Length: 166
Image (cartoon, rainbow, N blue to C red):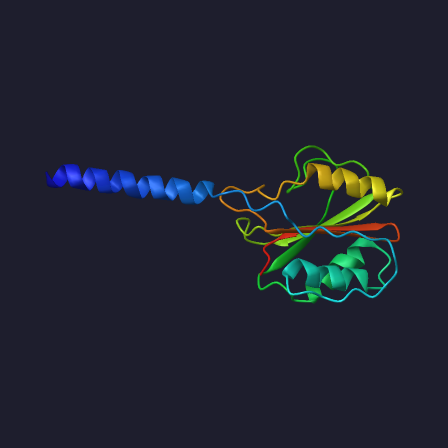
């Protein structure tokens, strides 16, 4: 009888772990924003809106400088790393992204934290943003999902971030 109870308890715990890992899809009301207007953007209460304000209000003119400024803002309490992107797979997207001339990624050093952002340089930022929005997958990591997707166009640069809301 004790063995049967332990077996049932183990099966129940395993089922709970699988359910927790699978999670439930987040609500589809992400807070995507995009703009190409040169206005001052006030930071909101979420991590994404704070990063958006840093990018939108910056005077950087290239993707690498923009990402350095975003990382230096210390908004998110995780160690962020940066890397220049070459052609191929981009974490956070289903399918290839091709409409850019240069891209720099900044993401959490711990890969299970749902935080990945990009600054792209593009000859057609509106078309690139559309491509990014269509291919974005906030659940690109096993057992994690970004709560918020934020995007913004400034000049020839596109900012795209998927992150936790707090």
